[in-house]
View 1 (cartoon, rainbow, N blue to C red):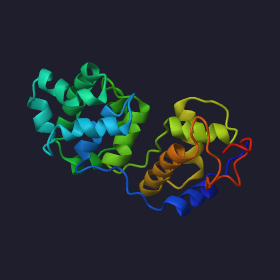
View 2 (view 1 turned 135 degrees about the vertical axis):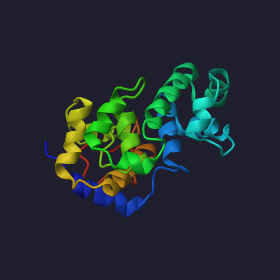
View 3 (view 1 turned 60 degrees about the vertical axis):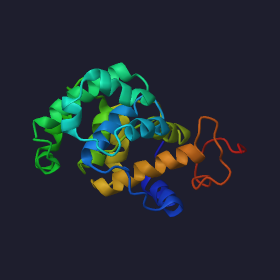
Length: 214
């Protein structure tokens, strides 16, 4: 089935506008948030981030003992694993002197390969870091994206294949990928839920999913 992803984006953007994701004070805060949001909701991540009292930096995490770090990120769940992940991703960032401009000068494919080799960093997390922390055009596929494609009749596929569905139709543009994914998430929370709320959905007129769900 052919999905008109450009038209879908136009409808979503008309409803939600430019959402200016990711809400963070620094690229490193995006990195930390991308790790902490694994297997939990964003409200729990916000609670964990608040425990740093506005002083979240790579040098702080690098030098913080693991017991203290675990307690700070406890609200995000899986805090033992995520403490390990934050230490390893911070070590990766240190290779670039904690300088986002240095990261941005690297080859995108090389950076993605490096990130995927870091413990605890899967495809979704790596792409979130590349897109939202450093502005590289990597489309992020998450549960909301998969659900949207499924509702439009796209068969279940692997992450890279679903990502290619978007990147084959869309211009290679980080700002576009950023806002498109943000709109998918917002619409997924408001309408395209596991039990969909089709009434009022901006995609209701073109979505082939069975109608009559309210």
